[in-house]
Image 1 (cartoon, rainbow, N blue to C red):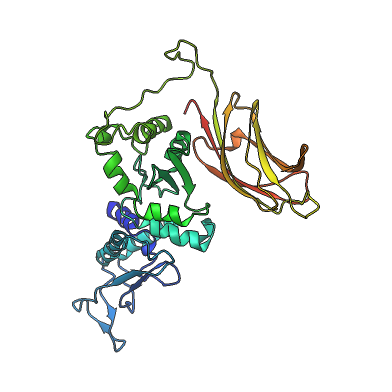
Image 2 (spheres, rainbow, N blue to C red):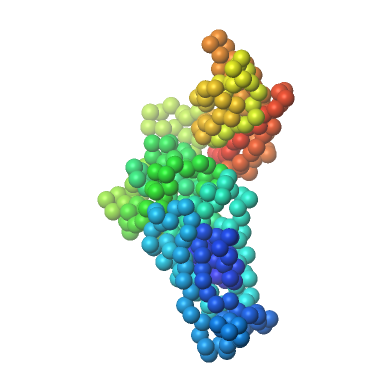
Length: 388
């Protein structure tokens, strides 16, 4: 199973089935097609191949070496290492049994190739390209083998792929240190695409985990979420595990403990991270047939709001709001409003109970706006309780 997982990660979307189809992946493979498959799992799938005359040739007549090339829209930016890794993983399948191939196909399809989970075909093609870069098949910070669906723009020119739990730590750093983006749901600029394709997990970790202590301090995928967040902050904010770092984790201060100044910290139940992505089909509030929408988020006493997007019924904010939650029984209220010279006009609202959210995991939601005739709000909400 280990080599199957490794092959799935290295190939990414390059291997969708026993015979990859050009329409299913941005990687195209050419290889003599077997005229029949073996039914016995221990037999090798390359035992028979189609000759030029259409007849079966025995296994001793080795099929020609497969060729693999990328024909997606990002071919110009794709690193040679990415296509080389995909080719190597594809060739590794030549020694697999039919049962192993089936497991591999299921893993790859479930992890990388379900286009229905992506915002667009272009996003899917870029995602499969990013997964093929060596090291990007696992989380850069905890090594989780669950396919990472978040990218973090770190530093001035780097980017890594991370899991949901570690992504929460990146959000807490602030956009000046790390700006997370969803591989599946966000719209990427060409500059950010290039950043990810020209760096990636292995390249970034070679710098930020160069210290000998990094291996000991790095959390496992099963570690507590709070431990992952401490490592993320130490790694990216303090650069503790770079070659010149001190190799030490930041101390974590439990809630209610006293800081150096002597004053007790304010105790909260946790932090609510709300990423307002976009809205669509909003009602028109202006005589021009448009609105100037923004979102106001409220949870208990905590309040925050997005910037105003002018003259549109389909705004895109892609803005992160953070709310300190004092009581887990508080309800998150999201109100879409039209900005006027004097006051504001309601464009609809929706609410969400914290009990509906899985702790420390980003939940993508498409919420129907209430009290108006039309409108939906797309948001990603992460509830980070202090008790982990």
